[in-house]
Length: 306
Image (cartoon, rainbow, N blue to C red; front, side, top):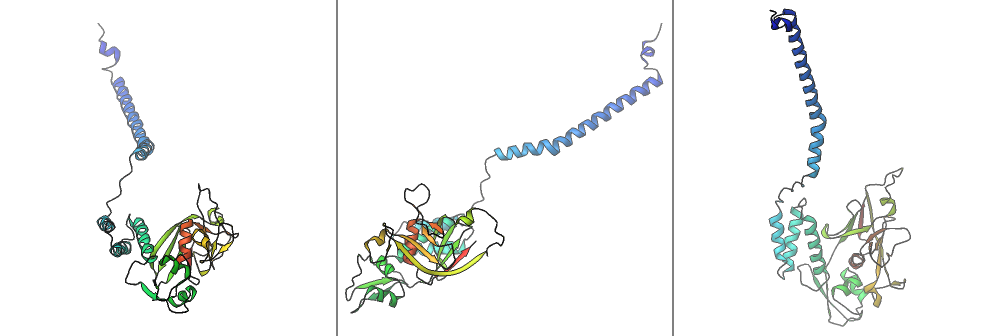
């Protein structure tokens, strides 16, 4: 009787070696295929899956702002009637926390407080009083106080230019300067070199928004000074501070940096049209242009940051 093991070669040395080699080759092939599959998954599939998961995951919350308690403390001052305390609190916050997530909101709050105090008879340590004398007229008082007639009218809520002997006119000595940042799309008003108020830019010059690279790039900083403030009435003619239309006028604030005149621009969606200079310029909200038209004086420094 023939041994079955012999028929299938289990007891055959040559057949056993063949089977061993076959198993080794299959095992090696499995290792190679497995290794290749692993590296393919590790190099291509896993990063793709991680990217998909990262995009679908909710945004990582920012770390807590360490200045938030101080900001909240400054906000508490607004609940009272002490504007001077609020001004001091927000001034301190802005100066000491320039990188805070709340610094822009703090600047907006501070700017409103500054103008509310400056353009009113509200007493402040820096506010002064001029007593009208015989033969005084508004232009003369503006020269003596180193302000402007329109600023005196706005601050003292004057309805006309007539003055009375003995009348008290409040004013605040100031040294304003303007920084126009096209990158940040903001116009910042400084007083004695410190932040006073900021205004958003609604429209930039066409040459800036077009994105065309000039053969010679413009300087990063251009310096100039205010040369003229033009108020336009509803009929398109120029008006002055003594005209009734002045309160509703639109403004151009012209300075020596060409092509960067500030002008009243209602912005997109408004039925009103922008009062744009022929040579172009930088558009800001009408109320911002009106306010700057009152605050600024001829000769105030202007810096344009490209």
